[in-house]
Length: 402
Image 1 (cartoon, rainbow, N blue to C red):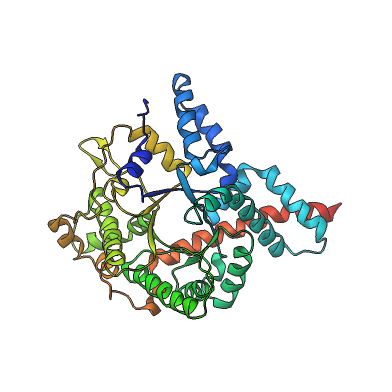
Image 2: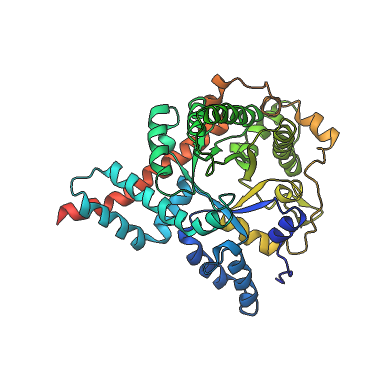
């Protein structure tokens, strides 16, 4: 597994310096994950891989890191608790010491906020030395509050107060877009998540624009503000086989490549729309896969087909491992504006699941909350949150048994 002088992610940034690579997990587990990953590679390659990982996040000189920011979500936060159980337990116990009568839910929330705060502090130097352009960490509001504007606003304001570089991750529900507008009007950075369709992505851009107009009218300080719009690629295309099953019912056979093209078609259209209309938001691509396999070779169209874009690519640990393992010799060329093959797009547009997601008027805002991908992701994230509540609550139970 020979690593090129510039690893694949570095080559993407070299193609367009405005391409940003973000870490898709808590910064608190980066060192532990790196150590674990190094144990998996051949001994003769370990020193080379170690150097690559240190370039991703340079703890001694964070401003030199390849990573420009961080995204987190409930499953990723749960991974922190599992990977660094004693560390998180010490946080929870400290909170209990100061709040002996605290409830399980409050203990979870206070622990989560401390995890967000400590992670954000690791990127604060990047934030400050880039004049607030980079170094944001996305802290997500509770997914169980997906349809509650007041609850999400309260949580968002608490998260935003933790560190100047905390960006608030808000879901693409009808209520979520009202929250994004209100936060933007206050000059608070936002990251729109649980987004799968063009109507959602453009709705976010519009709400951000509206919020900015209010902020400017009220002379709000926007020096720490930023807007990111996340597209959850594989969560849309692979969702419980929804698109594939719908295609089969229509007599349409979808290949692995077709699924990847469907995801890229929506992202590319959103990217071009945001650019052409001059929206101040930046597109972010997550839920990426090393896929499809073409002529027996693994490819990564989630990187290849957006190469050259002024975008953010957020990479979880498993994806980075796959990049180092399989994309060593991948050559990236500017493809962000390259269109989806005509015949592929025509075939995809025969599938309502795709057609409605691809058209700007495919969904109205009142339909966002019932989209299958949003409902499935809400369920997964809420379950992960409930698990986190249970895990940190063990500390409370143990203390009260004594």
